Amino acid sequence: MSQTPEPPALPSRRVLRAAEREAQKQAARQQRGAEADSTPEQAGAEAAPTAESRQAAAQQSPTRSDESTATAQPQPGTRSQQLRKSSFTGLIPAVPAHQGRVVPEIPRHSGPLAEIPRAAFVAAPVTEPTLALPSKAAEEPPPAEPEKTSRAGRNLPAAIGVGLPLLIVVLGGLLFYPPAFLAMVVLAAALGVWELSRALLQRGVAVPLLPIMVGVLAMPVSAYYVGTEGLLFALVACSLAVLVWRTLDPVPGAGQSIFAGTFILAWVPFLLSFSVLILREPNHLASVLELQSWPAGQGALQVSTMLLLTVASDTFGYLVGALFGKHPMAPKISPKKSWEGFAGSVLGALIIGVLAAIFLLDRPFWFGIVLAVAIVAAGTAGDLAESMVKRELGVKDMSSILPGHGGIMDRLDSILFAAPMAFLVFAALGLL
Image 1: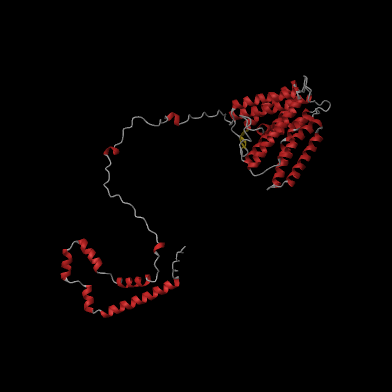
Image 2: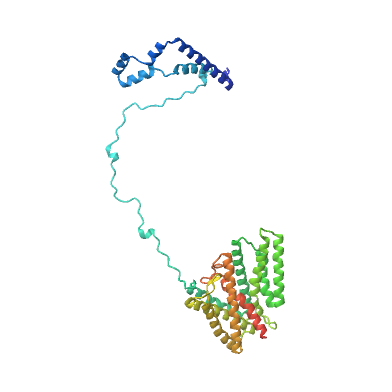
């Protein structure tokens, strides 16, 4: 089989540049020799055409005259450029015929074009729309009904519909089945801790939930079955567990996580467990299979009085503040809480406190007054404290678990401070 001969190698760039310089020199020498041979008369004759030549050129057509002029009178330097190109391109080898590429010729239509009928340009009449357009009423959704809120910003029907059944369930479990109330305390503390941990996570603080949830269960149970010593021991043990847990599992901002976890333990399950301390009767601890007979124990009645005073304080304060509130108590913390609402809280709690002292606790009326004033002061402080925490965290409500109320912490804020205050009042008067 015959092998295809390899094409000759192309010259290098250096050779091409040398050939170009040599061609330029040769063209310059030829141009200087041609200028030396020509006389001034010949140069003038070439530069200025005669009258006969101009008259003959005028008789021709403009197009023909321009073409002949362009071809007959070369521009200066045209001959030298041609000589230079010829000498330069002569050094580039030609491409072999078997390696060349043939570009196929584009076929052209030589026949006459068919005439487009005029009817093709006439628009056909539209009889029916192919797509049914929606009506204006279907395009615009009906306006949503505004939520029924009061002046204080709460949905009053939803608040009453949720709060009243919840109060009945809590009081029913408290008076007739104390272990159910203990379970409610644990559940409420767990939900409150979850809401706080989620709010803190939005600010970049991740708390260790496992040791905190262990404390949520351990503190109320220890308070009921062991007492004050058991509650304090559970608080210290769970705080150390948070420290050890974060030491073994470090995260960015571990110090903030430890302090936040300890704060949650001391705020929610620890303070809420004081209600269990009030319920506890050392000589008669209710068992899981035992129902409470009427009349209920002294501890259950005392916890019921504390809850009724807290609810009365919140309810009367809300109603009076929404109707007559004009002077804010703490505008930077809670702008909607007014002094008029605080006066309503005191008035409502005094009424419920006197009635509860006489009919539930079998105590003189002044005991109800002292207990009512203490509960109102503590509940208001707890409400303001929770409002301050929410403002620091940048949230309006901790969650939306309870319609019309917000989250669990929005209902526990007053009870968390009222329970230790009631425990101190009952202990000071010798009822515990």
